[in-house]
Image (cartoon, rainbow, N blue to C red; front, side, top):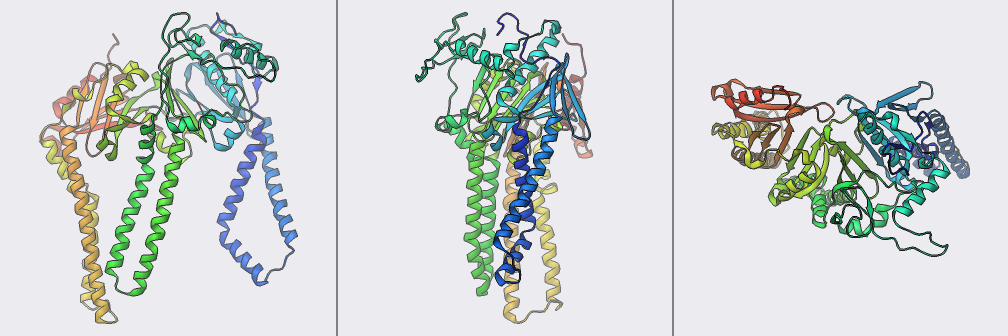
Length: 636
């Protein structure tokens, strides 16, 4: 490796590089299994009928012939997919040109997607469970093309190739930014696509770790190596050999990370050697034991499952108490354990999914980039350049507010192709880049100062100007009456019940006996009471949220940043840089204008479309000052 020239390329300019050959046989098998599974599920009724036809003797067939036919169909399906993917692989390649990265694909319709190095914003990769077994991943390259931009996806790259590709793209971006494209030097020994390059890389790793060659049959003790965040030198002692800086504190690991360390560090069959010599990490943290546990049990999926259990219990027991016939009571009693058991199983499964999803979590600051890596089975690596951060979001759900924890995320421009298809992943994408899923409020400033020190002079919660007194009255009316869905649903149900009762009293609805009419009357009255009780409980909760919102919400801005705080049963803080506000606006309805109030809005480019930070019932004069504050002005 060249120690003097920072622009040493490990990819030859103009050369077409192929994705890994596992694309030809792994991707087709996954696709074929999906097709077969969907066929079986969609035709389940037909398969059951065919099975019963065999049992009754209506259909006669040789079992060996049936098995052979099934195997033949599977072979044909997999063979067709293999052929299709082989053609796709033959026409798929990526190239590092002088000033841009290009990806070629397509069998009939040829496609070329290119990203100028200067516009590269993030290089992420994701490994599904199947991909991780084979040590390959899908790389996503996102540019600064805006929220409508589609990210470039390069499938089935070896992990070492993906890591080199990420380093190469940011190195070439730095060369373009410095106007040093001519200083770019290709080192064949650094190109891991060749045997010479692989051997040179192994020797470099061994030398950097201070390891002497180990005779066959012996095992060398590997000293702990750390990279100095100030000068970037690799060291094995407690102090840097060049600048004398002390070794940074070790990242705290949880029990899951420690117990599953071999699984977390396992790279797969074809992954290759980990890349060393990247830009040094200046700040890094993980999840402690209680943070991982509380993240798991407070996740949305388990909470929704618990809510389903509660509602099911209420409805089932109401049905048991209100129904008088023996059959209905028996059905209800059998339904209760089945629904409860299945819901608890789904809840436990959801806990395991969240647990493994956040296993081996790491967030770090590397140069000008923030990187987040997580997952024990399927791995996700996401990054964002500091210039692409649109906002800082600090959120507390109801449960997290009670125990004093929050979630920290960075608002970012998401390209259309960047959205993951997994349920948990897509939820996380809507929140931006989650840099800590569960952290105590008193650690927020420490984490943000280490991860995004550029936001150090942001306004804090104590700097917020509270809302005026009329905001509480308006919040109570808005949340408890005008926008209270529970109230209006209860009114609608009561009207329907009254109409049905009117028809029953008029004799339009006939009952078999007086006892059946009494049972109907008891059911109607009891169910309406249950609905009213739920409505009152929801309305009281919304009223408490309105009071908390009016008392604790607020706004603040300084020369560079806007802070919007929406409090309540759950809280949300948005810190938005002034230069990232694409559109600032205020709006007011006649009721607000009568009280000299307005709604403050700040629109950023975060998300796949846009994200608006807003606060209702801000004084009109403060809104006028806000509109004056966001006016473009010359940078000093």
